[in-house]
Length: 92
Image 1 (cartoon, rainbow, N blue to C red):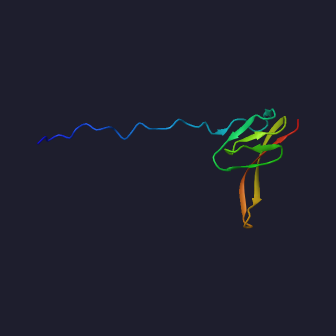
Image 2: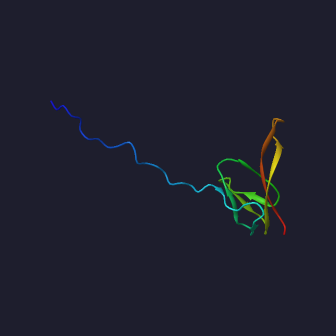
Image 3: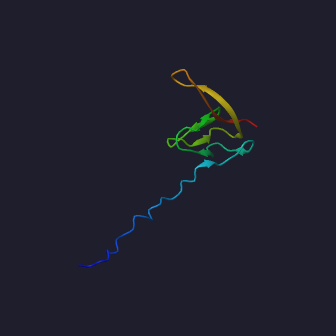
């Protein structure tokens, strides 16, 4: 009988490509309609005025303007409050 194990395939090396999530346009920067402001998984950031959410929770501008970030509190369906950052687009 052999006393050494045969060389098997490794279980490593299957890392997925990064998804490039995060803020793309910062506070007080100009944005055009349809331009992506933030890519996220789930709803970490809340929707404000003049922004829309894509099916993958991407937030993008609905109008031309300036991006505004602010701290916000919003009521959940069960009555509890949720804190988070709200993203809006304001007209220049």
